[in-house]
Length: 341
Image 1 (cartoon, rainbow, N blue to C red):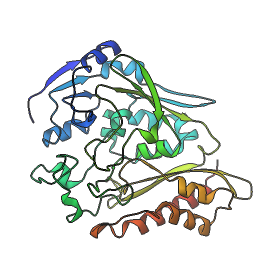
Image 2 (tube, one colour):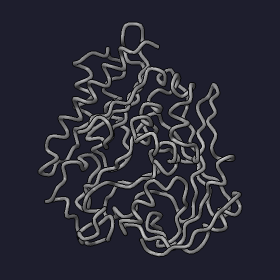
Image 3 (spheres, one colour):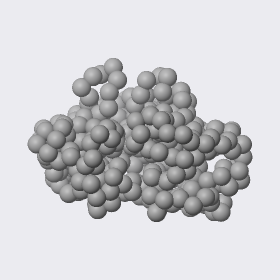
């Protein structure tokens, strides 16, 4: 690990002041200053010499202000510094927003969930071998313009949706896919103390020509929380995660599903997120549209799954993933339809 300085912010003004220094060309994840909360991903990447911040700003002193879990008739408010375990185990979240609780419980070990913050979790970076191993020179996400060794290399775990000819790395998280499915919003503070809110789907960027720029956060900005709108679909929801090792592993594919069904099984509204094989947290509007107004059965679920993966792009070892993704989504939809709420 390279030398770095550690500073602590006990209040919001101090955090913004410490984070307001000049940062690298608009690329949040390559900036020489990084905020530190749980550190479960950041410190790991620093040990691997993938991330090389010169300064860390410890913001855990803000947890009292930004660690809330609050629900009202309009929706759910989650603070950026709420711990994954606290949200997963919250009785209101488990009852009324099951897909979020499922995604958090399946995301990591209990020890990691106790440490990791929600904001840190959604900003986690890919587990692509070529990104995490600096002995490989060709990684556009780590070294812009160097190429993508994964295209012709070991890529079984990587993405088939949202990829580009510069990068096929996958987004590894679970919780973010559930947030995207439910149409959540994220609130961000800039260095001057101004607030902006954006749809969660717009927080992360597709790789395109600049895979090293992973989010639309500006240097020094700080996520303060998430707002999940209430809806009749949030109770009939679940997160299904398919992985090589059931005890703990990242997803090969996953599905976040929330449904509002009529008495006859007709889909009044659907919310669908896909994970494991995507370049960023992914909501499938195409699959949702294929289901609305139709009776949910195996045939309609299969059509929705076909729509979800119509634009999949495979590379050698990922050829199996669209079919696995389709089967996962069909299973998740049918299981959600059978839930008792």
